[in-house]
Length: 132
Image 1 (cartoon, one colour):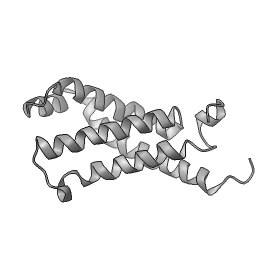
Image 2 (cartoon, rainbow, N blue to C red):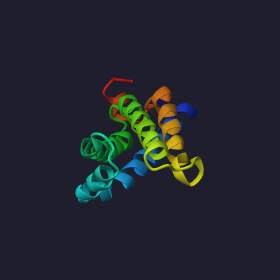
Image 3 (tube, rainbow, N blue to C red):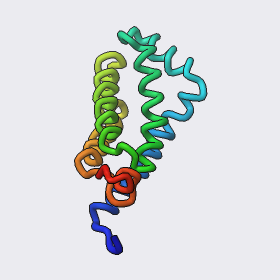
Image 4 (cartoon, one colour):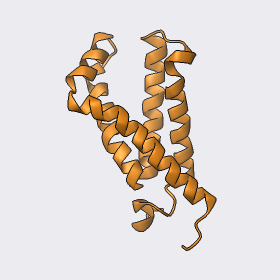
């Protein structure tokens, strides 16, 4: 395609930005998994260690997948679910307010939902593999 649509450009920009944001959040955690596990377990949240590991892996490998445009819509939905969970955690367990608390989680969830609905665009592995 010589002249991609604005939607394709938006999908590329969105994938790169959200993928980089999640990768930047996950990378420090994966370098020392004991820290996020200890933090979440310390709050008493049920299944804290499991969630800390799963969310860390999702942030690193899901971030990379979004950057590449690989399994874009599946990864985006997983990020929406993660951000819903972290919003609930922030509100219920950490007692944070919306501003200076969990507003970024809500913004990331909305951003991921837009990508899930928009799809990967033509500049993606999904498109190259014929999945989009």
